[in-house]
Image (cartoon, rainbow, N blue to C red; front, side, top):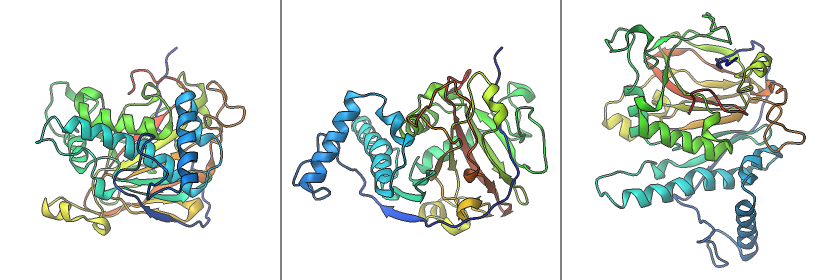
Length: 343
């Protein structure tokens, strides 16, 4: 029997404190073919070690998926993400865009930086994960509740009241509106987003749910919850291993010059609050949060795709109420096994 995967929640409370680190990166970091002993970014010892690491990755195609299986320090996380998300994608985009002078880069390189909120369990913010233009494309692909469309009320890309859990229950604990985007609704942005999430997580795109786009209006929120539930282990795709949440517009605190110039609407409130780390993340357009929802991760001792996954309560989080304007986000959830009809 084929079973779909839906949003789930656990309502608990806790508090803790950790330190958030902000590290600025150069637009493009060296690849195996660019690193050498005289590199200004690496000493000769560091360069050789980095090349050895890359060679090991090439020899073992599971190394990327295993990266998150062991505890990592802040610099290891930054190096991995910069190579997996920024460097590889930037070179690919540059090669593609060289054929067409009218095509803008798909990543705003001047916005690229990484914040490590927690090393273990991993919780990171990847700024400049997707271009602001692609963020706009994703929002524009969503159909408003009152808009006419060829597929009637059953259109997946039409906003509807958000639900929770495997039974898709409506609740006052989650009061936003949700739409699901399939690749045909917004091909290039969704493909690029999925590719970057795959590079970041080490998981194949066939294990991803379709993109969920969420709109929060004033007063709407998602109270403290986790994205994985024990009951999700019974699904054919397994539980929700990891989450990538990306902001599609700016909060007033993070309004960019581009947003101001384009007269983009901003909002107040709506931070993503992680109780364990006492951190409220202020939304920034094109920035993505990434974390693992379960205690078990690919590469960890004893991990198996078919094993029972236990929720990591340290990653419970909340979408705080929006005070004014509209907040837009999108989610990509990942599973240990292929998700039916997902990308």
